[in-house]
Image (cartoon, rainbow, N blue to C red; front, side, top):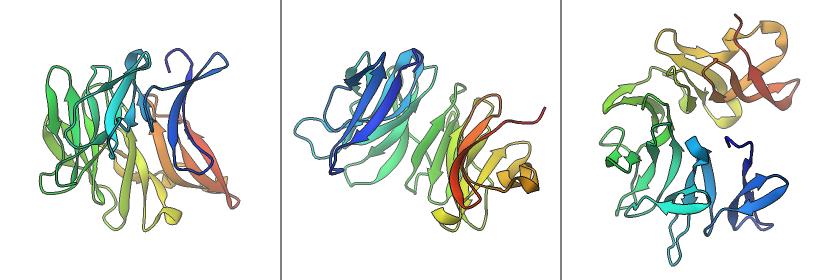
Length: 238
């Protein structure tokens, strides 16, 4: 969080209940609500995620400000994935037939459904320009004020985008299955690139999935070196 506090998700010993916490100055503080799960942190330390409202059987989208939960009033359940500097919230919402679609929501504009109209979709990321990264099946899309662009990623394998920065650089993983994923980078100028092709060949690393990218182009993710799973940090060469 902006304050330096940490947001943590935890499971009970039987992995049946989950709870989100804030760790602050040596103290652990529960987020208010039942079956809470945090997915991201926004400006002014807003925490976004989901919870299980009293008397309900399906999780609902919620955000916390100063540990006070605020539901955005989805009809049939869902979750919030991220919020940008403008206060625009993205997430996934279910309809009354159990189908899920990505959405964007703000207090002033309300809710707008995102993604291809004839397919399921899921929100991945939103940047400060309001551009939204989406997943629909094996494909990824970029939504710019309602204009939907399909990203030209791997044509052979499943693509799993995971993050986007304010320059519209997208990172994630692709492959026939999770065990054989390789990390990728996409941007409008260079297109789709296997991150393994951008590092020296003699490092011993296989970069399997990229989880986040900042505006300096630094990328973190998961990889393998000498048959051992490790986290990695890539810093662009100047």
